[in-house]
Image (cartoon, rainbow, N blue to C red; front, side):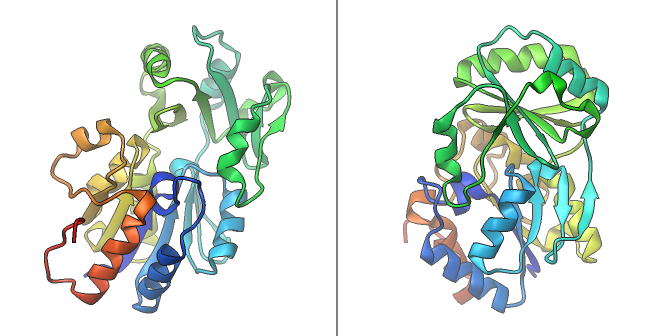
Length: 273
């Protein structure tokens, strides 16, 4: 029996223009009325997700910063983990062999040192955005995660360099083809979902989860029912070949599946039907 459903945002719940589709909102509301707990599991910042949750008018639990923060439906903190200060210091201050832009996150917001207005398009629904500053002046002991944004192939080369430098001190993963993230070790959406399950006295077997990128891998693998979006990263599909693939976020495929599950949970599902 499913008692908790966890959803990635970009590429999963959100349309390609990063807006919320009405069909998706209606399906989430129906799921909530059925008594299923809802969790929004995303790389987005808590400050932004609080705005989006209010717009959705749904009592959802929040897993933000790719698992670095978990909050309850009233906004109370359940779990928090930051990067070790030494790791944050090295990533921010070291000169990496990459043209990628650097983005640092802490509880106060999103910080970068170069204007990139094109990145704000994905945040129009909330109005959330970056703050420009000298990143080297940020306190290293308050960093939740660090992102590099660039072309995918160059980020793959950077990941090799980061892996060699940081080893097991950090979790380095792609949250999108053009976004490489440095997270606290053993910190991901899957571990955060497990913590939430413990908090709710549930098991992971009672969860369903939906995602499209490599930062969703652990969550999808550990949930009782994991679903991959048709528009997902090829690496994710290759990593979890046993999981069912739904349709595209453009057609609100999560809503399509939830409507089927709510009406006929015992029947096989086909994204084409």
